Length: 290
Length: 295
Image (cartoon, rainbow over the protein chains, first blue to last red):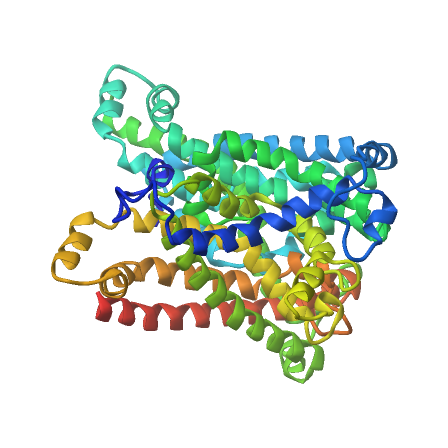
């Protein structure tokens, strides 16, 4: 389950449809309705975001807007700190991704290769935290973050997410699969542990690091519960939280709400299309989703 | 290098490498797990000093009508969400696992909702399922169905939640199933075909048993997620209309952060944890037996 070949997903297996691919396949009859249901809500979001308020308050629904009203988008940007939310989310996400890559690499390598006092006990304890659902830890975590004076700051969103048990576990498992001879040879040549990690192990770990980066990115970008509890000021909100408050305030301005929604989804979609294979591998590995 | 010094330096370097991550997980993982257990035996509003109340929080839970309602909703939701997303994911993956025209487009269409955030999904579905101006009622009306109240009706809100979350999650099941389907050796399928099995026969007797472990994983994973449902409810109905979509984590959130009964909320969290552990264990035991019997 954990080892998914993304490239295999890209290329469909020939199965027994080979040679019939040019003819109309009956599978279209299954796939067309599914694709319709999956795509229509997203298309409808885009269509509504270009309508006037009157067009949204019309039944039957206005399928084709009279004109493409891009003013909805500029209105959202004018009325909300949307760019601020975007930058906050970007900062929090990049910090979490960077933190996870650094700290999980270091810890994962230590647990994979270095024999140190208490290694096994600590590793088991870390694994145990993976089994505990988030709602068990959320109240005390809130109290700890409050004690640290980080409530209503971006620190509350960044610091607890700089390293995760999952990342440590995943990288440790990956490091264990690398040939140890390379590392031993480098050690004999006088390289330090850090040198071995930086110059030999990490360059061989591209796919694993990319997967961890994508998972952390997806998780942090779409996280909602934690920002909801720790952030109160509009200026410190993430995109998801900001959008939720905007939804609360503009329930009747559907066209503006949809314009804001399109802008919130777009960056993620772009990243998805660029890094599709890593996304698919990351998703197949863990099932994390905002 | 002298061996003893090397070993001692390993202790030092090992801890130096591990300690940043270990400290973070200690502070924001292990300590909260223990603290939460302590909280569940206390009465506290997170501001004043807590008061020890023993098992009172746990004893109050079964008598709390809102909590009981939340658990019932959660079970109904889970009983619908898990089969629909897993079986739907399997069907979609099987359909997507072939070389036909436009397959890339179909795949993208199914995968994209996975990266759409919960809030965006909620905003879209509140609009598509709007009882007055929604696209869904219009489309259903054209084939003679409805109109439905969806999120606005006490009887329909929970089912609308199921529909919305299946839409958002099914791509995940499809991705996992597609990866598994492509790991099935062609020789097995061809051998079955030579033995005279039709498409349905191959699927039932070869493909499905081989997908057993993946199915078990998806069932367990979906159940865990379904019981922990929060974002989707908070952002679409916030428990309403009335209390018709109250679910345990939403109730926990309201108790801890809005009503200031954090000890009670911690008890809810631990009860949920226990429910998840028991359900997962049952599924794994039953599932393993079925997987091995059919394989």
